[in-house]
Length: 162
Image 1 (cartoon, rainbow, N blue to C red):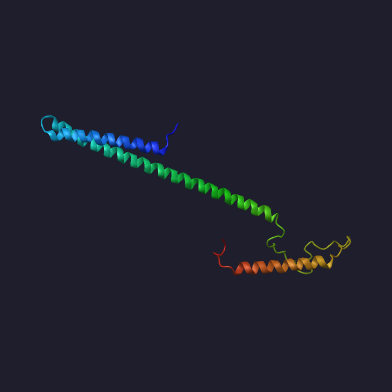
Image 2 (image 1 turned 30 degrees about the horizontal axis):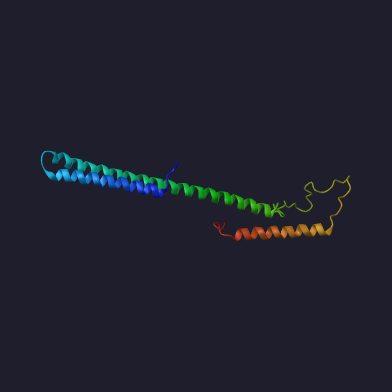
C-alpha cells in the first residue's frame, strides 16, 4: 500500500544524499585534470541540469495537484451550498404551506348602469337571491386591498424588485 509521509521524506533525503555524493565524486575527478577531466565536467553540468529539471517538474506537479485539489474543494463547496439552498427553499415552502391569500386581484369590468350587460335576469326568470351583507363587505374589503396594492406597486421605482 501507501507509505507514510515520514518514510517518503526519509527516502527523499537518502536519494538527495546519493546525488550529492555522486556529484562530489564527479567534481573531484574533474578537478584532477588530465584527459578525463572534460568528461567529468560535462557530467557534473548535465547532472545539475537534470537535477534542476527534476526539481522544476516536481514543483509544477505539486502546483497542478494543489490547484486541482483547490478547484475540487470549491466545486464540492458550491454543490453543498447549492444543495443547502435547495433544502432551505424546500423547508421554507413546507413551513409556509399552501398560499392562504390571493396576491392582487384582476379589476372587475364596470358595466354602465341600465345597460344590463347580460348580468340581469331575463323578464321571464325570477330575480337572483340577494347576497348576505357579510359577503358584500368582504368583497369591498378585497376591492380596497386591491387598490392599496395597485397604488403601492405604482409608487415603487422600477429597479426596486429583487
